[in-house]
Image 1 (cartoon, rainbow, N blue to C red):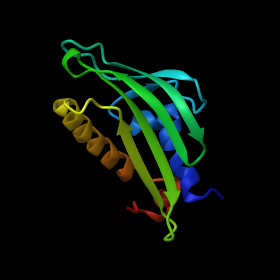
Image 2 (image 1 turned 180 degrees about the vertical axis):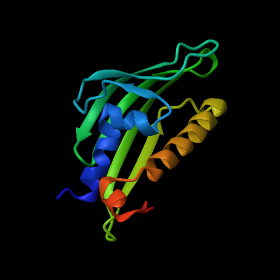
Image 3 (image 1 turned 90 degrees about the vertical axis):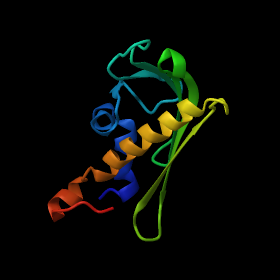
Image 4 (image 1 turned 60 degrees about the vertical axis):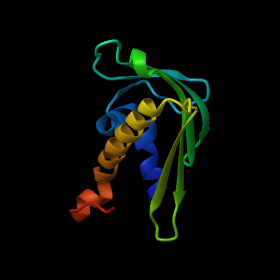
Length: 140
């Protein structure tokens, strides 16, 4: 039987699962250092909707880090996303996201990222895993 942390890991590393809760479609994310992929959302004025990424670090199932480059012309960001998963004493998985590398003066980009990640993480948290579906509920 997989531990809770091993059940959360695919939500961050499997393109199909990631695309279910993220505001972007994941194109070929693979947890392999050096692997390049894209996250895609609908294009808009001044933006093609494509985020270019490269995997920097993988320590399955505890840590994943990748670059994140793209965005609308007036909000282009080049940052690093680092996901850290730890098991708590209560048998739950703590998921931490750090998005680093913002220009400190880019208040609008930082605010937009914070807003979008809060939405996406709520969607991730609301996803029932297979054990929860069998028990008839979502554990938060």
